[in-house]
Length: 236
Ligand SMILES: [Zn+2]
Image 1 (tube, rainbow, N blue to C red):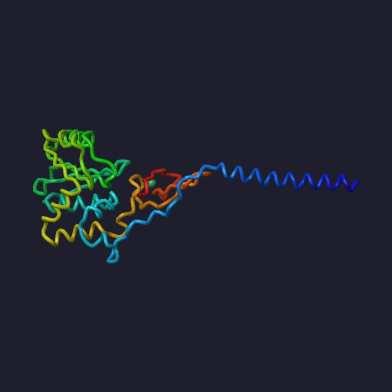
Image 2 (cartoon, rainbow, N blue to C red):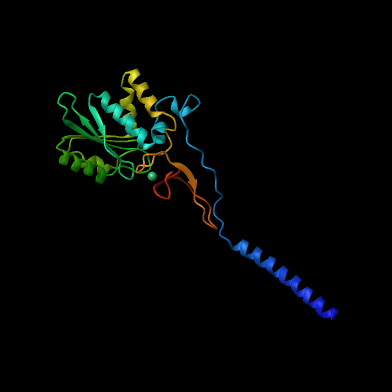
């Protein structure tokens, strides 16, 4: 009887050891991704924010699309137009209408695209040309914080569309009177200027991380209204 109990207990011990070994083998087989690094939160403006003190390409690249829109709208007002903004598309590409203040009639159509993640291509500028034709406006401008593809430059050659890259915009802002430059800088560096806005809900987004078993988390900007709104942007 005592022998049987001892055999039973040894069996339990061996089983437990086998289970522990199995768990360690299972754990060793789990996919190992790169270590997740905490992406820094974007600068928020104010006197301690080095990017908010003067105009630079880095500042342009940080701007939330909505802030960029407000800066572009203010810049167009400096050129003597009245400006009205239309709702953004799902990517945050904005259309602004410039009105002749004397006649009150639409005089130009402007699109602006923040973030330097993609070059603005010929499709985007030809789409603006089609919108100009539909609105009966002959003057257009496309402003980006980034750059245009060579095909986009070729595509607008026959049309009255002004392509303004990030570096070109910096140059033009630099030619404005100092008070106007500072006015635009104050608009650009409002609080949380680098935090994206949801183009669908028009609210500032929150930084989140994906949680998938066995995979490293990936940071992204998500809408505060999730799950009602699923719009995201990569957190860079
Ligand atoms: Zn949303």
